[in-house]
Length: 146
Image (cartoon, rainbow, N blue to C red; front, side):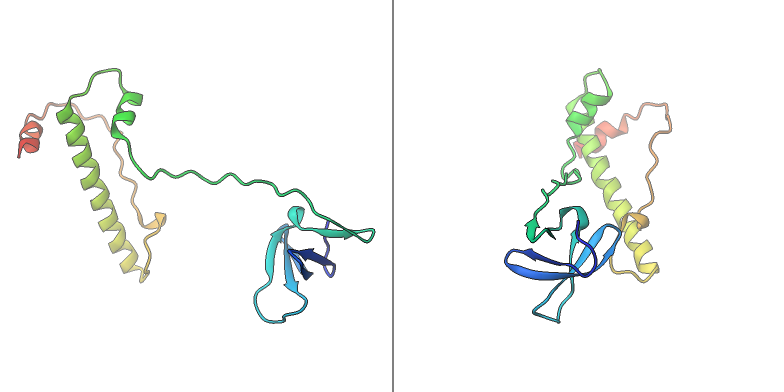
């Protein structure tokens, strides 16, 4: 494993290890003084041992999956065994669109109040929807017809 002050070679470029912080080696090109050090995990950094270079196998990282599309039909099927009408699906699409728009608008105001230029998860208020509400709203059918 590489240690502070040792040399290593990556892609035909020679680097010196400046420091190791949080299991990350900070490597500086020995030819150029300018620029930021290259950061490589210590367990993936090549090192010299007995006059030969040892290149550890890179550990493949699994990217975090984020949803880019919401499939309302799939969500419905996961959460109920009842059939759902087209008008109910359309109302849910409309509701999701409105809810997301309102939440983002409120988050924008929260960011602006704090003088920030980017909305982060910390600006978003969690929309609580798991309170049971009993009723029947016939006007929702009329809303979709308009």
